[in-house]
Length: 449
Image 1: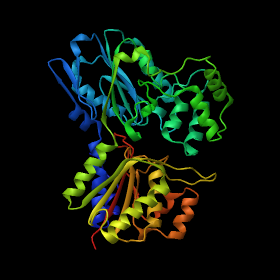
Image 2: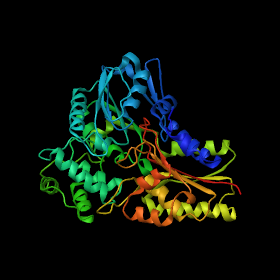
Image 3: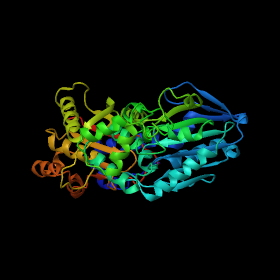
Image 4: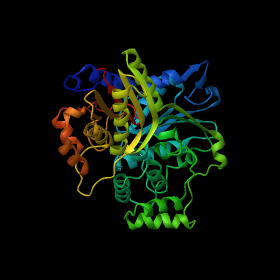
């Protein structure tokens, strides 16, 4: 389903073609239409959900007066559309906030922005809370949550303004903080995150359907956990700001400090009784994409090696390790013999220089890998599966050591300016919005001599 828009320019060798096939297969496998078809079924008014890591759960639809869909994320519209097709006329209505509308007919799609929240997102989140509040004890709320939901469902707590939230978000994204650290702050600046959507929907039954973009598939981190218990506190949020020495608007720091003193309600704690009526199901994740990519590698006659679905840390440092493993394969046949494909998933980050250029973690990964590689037998590719790497219109990149001057490449890395140099060598991968988001997918193809 996904199309690599500039594939003709990128497919320079058989190894390039295999890398691009792996990327396309991984993204397609994690699309909501595919994962819903594999995980959900409706028969005789019973909705059965079998997530990737849990036993099947049955929801007897005739027990509920109304069934609502709410949620947000890059893939929330596509997830809502797939659920519409599953539930048919049993679905009452609902609303999701997304930056990639899918054309739903029953569920309202509201536009928001990612990765920086916008006024549209605030209005959409308000509508989501209104629909959740409408649900009663005899209703079912299906929460569709995917990567990108943290930005697309902002709902700043008064007196925090959208401008305050935008400033905090930008600072957190630029400082190199991990996603769980970022979300600890965002949850405590919001009236929808950290289980508060479930609190709004109580006492309705809540079935959360998740497409994960988070290492380890932590429900409290995905989209900042609108229906999940939150193990973090206001004190944790303040500690993140202190750890990274972030200067944030006074409104935000004062609000968090007041929350730490008990002047604002905490997010939903893991032992909150309202969670007894909430069940979560992870339908797709980075593992979904990796397994599909592995199958494509095998079908093409390459030996696949999945390093991990949990890679994190600085993109450029992670690339050096991946390049070293690929070079070892090329030189010694360890840990696998060429032709080989080395795969990984997860989420790397970039700590931005003060006067930084343009790019994203996946572009920086590819540029760093190309600069470090000694072997011309290795093709390194990396994309964000939502089709948006950082704040660019690129999904990622694909390159070899021959594509980039080491001097120029290292200069670009020093200023986080990967996009221009990769674009100049026709190494940028563009897909447009993909309809899903399970984080990064990295593919290193080691050709046979």
